[in-house]
Length: 157
Picture 1: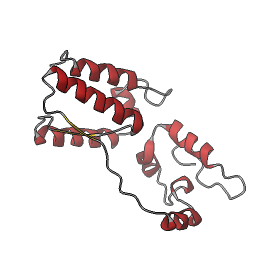
Picture 2: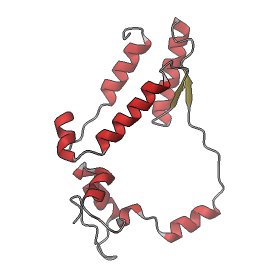
Picture 3: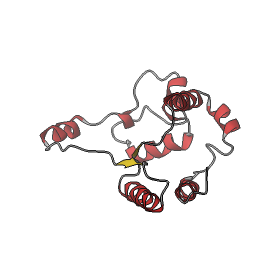
Picture 4: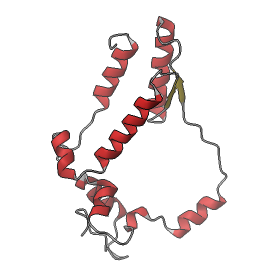
């Protein structure tokens, strides 16, 4: 048992979805597996060779992540354009890249460093920062959408 999930399952009793659910419920992530002293990659992270072989015969397509340009967001038409692009990208992709946001590279680097430091902490330390983490599923989507709409409407400086 590592990180709260049994990683020694045999072929007969293997239920990938159940193992993924158990892994997700630990809220410890891959760092939790590493910290548990695990020496072998859990089966849920290894794709079957027949699946990989099938992928090699499939036609490869170029995938481009949606890019949202924030230039012109200060005017009403620009805000509407950006809001629509965010809506479409969020609904169809779930993520997007933002350009011309004006955030200095030093701030972005600091943010990435902060995320890295947060994720390297023990689960208990994370719970001190984000109350409720690891207890029940949290959905920050509505908060993010409201904040995004308020930002695009000019309500957040």
